[in-house]
Image (cartoon, rainbow, N blue to C red; front, side, top):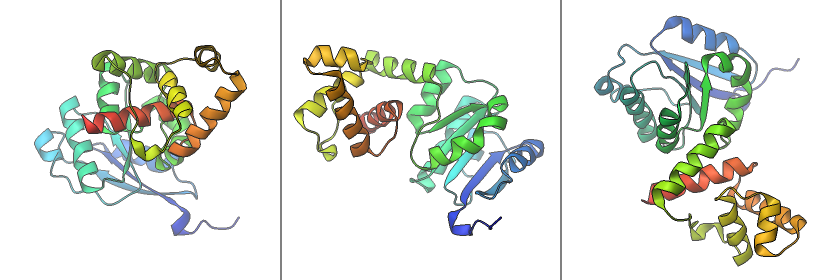
Length: 224
């Protein structure tokens, strides 16, 4: 089998206070497509995590064993140092409250420890390319929570260069309407809706409707 060059490998930095956790992730990701950098955290206090100097990587896997505020401090620290970095958080479980907080901070992926063993090698490349690895139930609840708190529909920025019809379809997607419902609302064929959805995904550089929704809400949150 041909070796994968360093330039084609995905650099992943795993941050955890526990050597066994670091060792397990290194084992799971001991594949040709990954270059893993393990960083053991000496403290799980928020002030200390703000001062951590993680090495540069494409994706950071954060072991969320600390309190929520401390985990948030570490995530903020990483993104301030490396704004283009992608983050995936692993924890025992992800409640709605903690998940929404992490997504608003800029986290792209959420896994439990049990899920990580089977899914992380597939999740990391997707996250590295700007996608999201988030359970559908959490995604739906996250969108609903933002709609409720804002009390209005999201207006996308002008950079996307959307046509009037694309804007209408996007606004319908952001209130969780299915293709059939959008077609009835806009009085157009369902296949036309699918065509516009495909164009929207291409313009925003994502592959899935879920990724498009999260991206739009994150852009909105960044401007508030």
